Length: 59
Image (tube, rainbow, N blue to C red):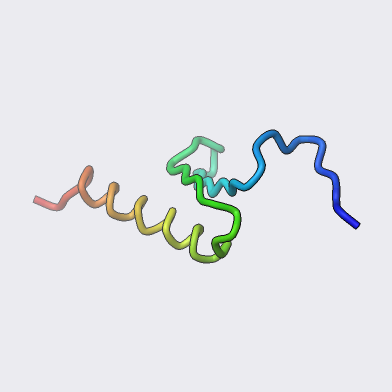
């Protein structure tokens, strides 16, 4: 039996979104469906960390 998700618009995609405490989006990554969820979340956090260190560099 197949499940039904009424809100799903695009098949085969996962969205990993990192937000702050106010709900503002810091990072959004779209991965393919057959990839692992942990890997996608780790990738989103790593890219956020790299971007943050480039923006706020201790000089």
